[in-house]
Length: 166
Image 1 (tube, rainbow, N blue to C red):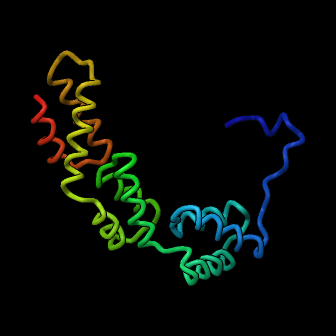
Image 2: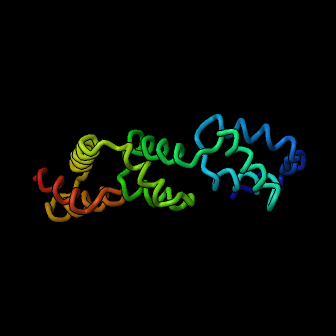
């Protein structure tokens, strides 16, 4: 953590929101990109709004459809798969961390086309295989498998993809 605030007396202290201000700020926050209730709750806590006031604001955001957990799960899964090339296991883990229900996680994962998923896995495996400078083929294979599994791909699919590279 930086000590910048300690050495700069002109730095403004952390700004808290009033309830009226919070509603407008939350609408902007949720309109910018899909958010989960967990993220909104965390943002409100950070800005000094806790307990019943936070829950009322969240209920209001759900009522006006600024917050929708299913829409969030679908957008999150689509985006993390297509942009960051994460596997289903990593996406599931991240959605669980955001308190998304298992049913909504399944809806989110349904956004991923199985053929596109396997093609992405093969592409990632080939890229990592080319970049890995290891001479020993067993160690190289191990490193590629570990990498792909850390990206959240299932072990059986990873084994199948890597076996096709040798």
